[in-house]
Image (cartoon, rainbow, N blue to C red; front, side, top):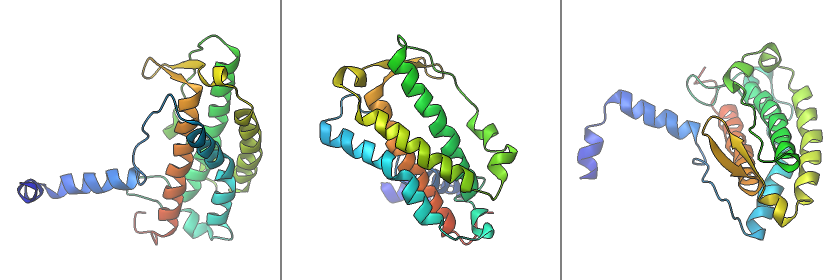
Length: 195
């Protein structure tokens, strides 16, 4: 039965499936509102180590490689790095809103538009790397100081109209870090074939 289904796949469907695999190399995020302590600590560690891991991947790479994409019609390596700086700045603000207000509704931003602004198209990634390093130190310090009650505080995401608690949002951003690390790595190994 499986081979019969596979035989019915059109080239377009197969291409879309391939792009989906490249888009979600580590799989899609699976929400977890009540992580146990070891998992929570792993998530915080993933967030803490992200800037160092990015730096190790892009140390002394050429501008040519920075402009390689990780998938067809995807972002370049440099855009992914600049996006992480933008996204994680927004994230720490969302955490702080949830920690200081009564179930606030967070503000959306158009990440695809931000990724096409001049600062996200520059080959100068050092500013974003420096920003990530300081931001993640501050962010990690905040996360390590949270108590059980704080982990249960929530914000409303207007795109879904759903409530997300701080604990699951830590997991979301640990996933986000690993998700984009995989994109950077595959982009650097792509030899420019998706450009």
